[in-house]
Amino acid sequence: MNKILVSGKVEGIILKSNDPINFLGTVDKKTGIISDKDHSLFEKPIKDSILVFPSGIGSSVGAYTIYSIKSNNTSPLAMICKKADLTVATGCALANIPLITISDEEFESIKTGMKISLDTDSTTPIHYQ
Image (cartoon, rainbow, N blue to C red):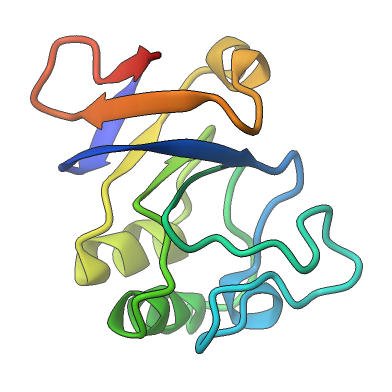
């Protein structure tokens, strides 16, 4: 069952990671590029993607990082998680980035490169194109 945490309506291309994301230590605030060489999305830009990942990890300061990447126009269009921790939920709310949680099964079916439209006002918020 999808749970909407921050509403919005966007279309974009999925960028998926099976690794949790620590926004403070993993994402460059100025460029929106994953800067942690140990992360599966190393050197990939999250800008203008629909970022799909299991959950956030790490410091609550990560919420400020999410707000910063939005301020720098390097943020994803939306985020989709299996579990939204307080840091990701707070950051998305502050930055007005749509955020929803999805089931394990739906998470497994989503692949990088898929085009989706996300509309939190719809009865089925994710539409695969």
